[in-house]
Structure formats: structure tokens, C-alpha cells
Length: 142
Image 1 (cartoon, rainbow, N blue to C red):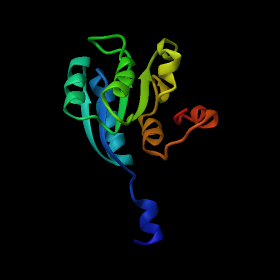
Image 2 (cartoon, rainbow, N blue to C red):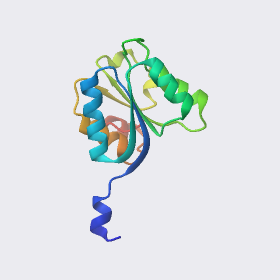
Image 3 (cartoon, rainbow, N blue to C red):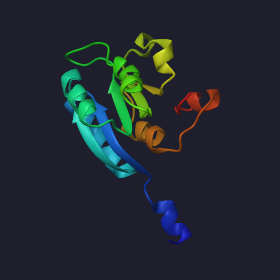
């Protein structure tokens, strides 16, 4: 593979759950994910649908809306992944109220306040895993 081909290759992300009850935003995120990286995308519009997917297979990444139509504690899904798996998926939170995410949960992934550009969220999710305060301020993992 030439250097030019390597630069154009999309990063592989694996299986991604989009946990979002707004169908327009969910589809925009799916389109942005498919344009930005190679992945399998599953949209979960409720906590119930998400639990069924988590029981079937732990994803490689999750976009979590913390306020779903059937529950207001979507952030608890991030905590749950620590209990049911041996590895934590990459996590990005999507919310209109970032202050409602408990501090210890917020450390699990980048937080995007609605409205946001889906492409920016995908860049944070598909990019190299970053750690530390500077990375967190840039939208990476803390």
C-alpha cells in the first residue's frame, strides 16, 4: 500500500452503537460515521433496545444520548459496560445538559453538547485514542 493510499484509508472502528432517540440526529451520526470510518452501525432509540444489543455483543464504540425517551440516565450505560465486559468501548456522550453527567462517568469519554457537528463527534470517536487533560479539552478521552 502506498503512502498516499494509507492517508486516504478510513480508520476501522468495528461495531458502533448510536444510542439516540432523535431519528434525524441518529441518521446524521450514522452517515457521518460511515463517511469517516469503517464500521458497523446499530441505532438504538431506547434503553430497552440498547440493553438487547449489549446482551448480544459488547460494541467497540458507543455514542450515548443521556436523555432517552424511556430513561433520563443514559449515562448509566457507560458505567454498565465496565460491569459486563473485559474492555471498555470508546464512548462519546451526546447531551443538551452536560452538567447532569456525574463526574466519574464524564471521565469515560468526550462530551458533545447539542447542537453539535456530527463530523466533529466522529472525528473524536474514530481518531487515535487520546488521554490526558489536553486531549480531553480537544474532545478526546480524558
